[in-house]
Image 1 (cartoon, rainbow, N blue to C red):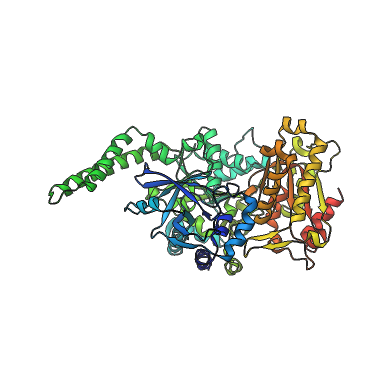
Image 2: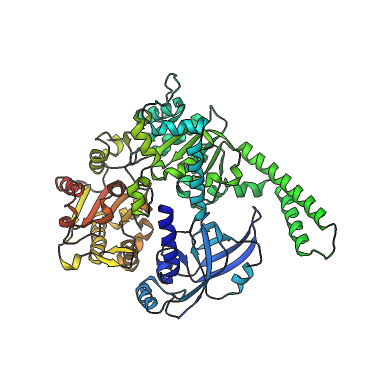
Length: 629
């Protein structure tokens, strides 16, 4: 159902959505500047492209995603000029609605090989079609429907359904309550730098024969615990597989493992592109291998031979075969060495189907952020292992499911949730948090974690100002001025007056603290809204407001999903919803709100219309809790 819904949404987007909207949603780059083309270390023909539009817009391009190039026979108004600023976007989009541009797609699919800011490297088929793009005018690029991920998930499910042996055993275990997960027995190990529940979690991971779960509420040091568990596992096993749903989550855990002195081989492309991250990617290691220059020259010889083939050259095939054999032999040798040296192989869940991992088996699989991963995606790497460790928090962000019917039919239920329900004996809840002031943490702990989370003494009373109240709810006036508005078909909602009030609230709080102290202590701020339209509007306001100029590097504005796994000294949340019916839409998904309110270390300011929000029991309780502080 999800596959059909996404395919249909993609078809609609390709055929019906105006180009300007695709650009605003981050699904297209237009106009593009085409850079140089070359063969990369994996022998793929790639081309560099640069975004010329508004760099404020967050885009959705990432490694491995399929893309399509297009040209736009524009009716001038339909596309922004490279210099057009975000403020003119609204005029441009209204203009573009009146006269849609004609878009013509190039007849091939390409793949994102690397993205960094406004530069992207795209792998294209090596069949001469690149020349058409390089010679064309008004070229753009947009995301293409990702058939491969779905195919990989379907394939994994088929194999799991039919599986016998170890995979079949794990499937039956995860789906039943009658069978208990098996464990080893040994005396607990002590780790002086971990707290009691973290230590318990690492011991549970080491004892597990089948499965263990590390349930980490916000700020409880889940990553620290997981890194320790991986480190200890590597004292007993030669190599482990570490996966997560997103590239960003894989980067995060990989970086921590590298800091711990572990040899990590990262399959796929890191999103946070810095030298440290790049140095342990497969491509960089491959290029750095002493045999690589020889391999490169053989590949070049193959290309030259093909392009200068003479008619009637009988020895052509012999020469070609000899060179190809030599190249394959070198590739196999380099690969064997890279995989032989690595202790951790790290990739996304779907990335674990990469041909580089063909035939590889591992003792243990660690899945980080497991509560955000579709179950079908988790089974892809589970096929290669004999036991699984899942870490995450099913009370925070759920997996993204676009089809409501699929969600109702159960696609939103993750493998982690299933195992937590069926085998509570495999779960360790981390109970000591090191991020938030006690009063910010208390509400989340009561509502989501059965009041089991405690604050570490060093953060319990942390605050910016003396006698400051850590949480405040600014109730917006229930007037027509503060009503939510609807933008675009699926672009979301916006509340302009509330956005202005958000800036005002931050400005007043900054004045209380004082400029010198903010800059000296580098107090950082996160401004969160569940709606992308509100986020983009807030960004534009911050850019224009003179007062915030000295603090720009300290303020980030993003959606709840954009703040997953992050924290800030001060958090402001603009809830947007304000209507007479008490409709709050997807704010009913309380896991999102749990993420939003637990990003703050010392101060949390919520802005929203209480009369709309408090018709829901969660927000009523939250409002009353803050009011009583």
